[in-house]
Image 1: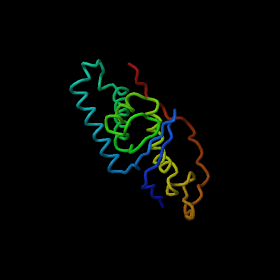
Image 2 (image 1 turned 30 degrees about the vertical axis):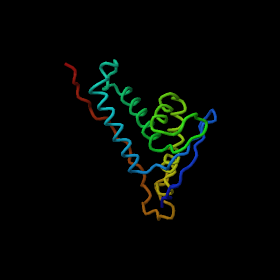
Image 3 (image 1 turned 60 degrees about the vertical axis):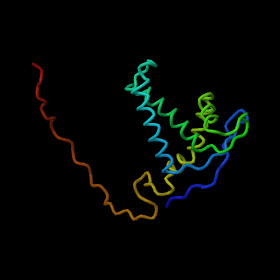
Image 4 (image 1 turned 120 degrees about the horizontal axis):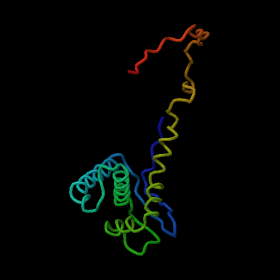
Length: 162
């Protein structure tokens, strides 16, 4: 059985007196943000990567830029109020906050998604037990028999060298 997540905004404490009030993430919103990040990456790869001297086929470039785009997209979606930032919450100020404070941006990403990661990692009591038997389930496997004796001789290996 799974537990349903909180549907009310929450406050995330970051650092340096910065707090963000965020709306909860939903599957459609996450999918939309991911699709938008992929579209922006593709546009960047086609139009600006070469002039910036970066190879979009390089996995570290792709992963780094995709993560940055996801963080910004999530913040633009989620942040509805903040404390400790001397500006009103607008798309431009949220984007400037994420771009200008990479460590706070990474902390936001982690703290915003950690409830989802916690629910996934705990499995909400629906994952298999480490020994393969679900709680309350009957073990119907028969005990293994005595192992067979090893082969008396090793099979010959063909010589493949010229």
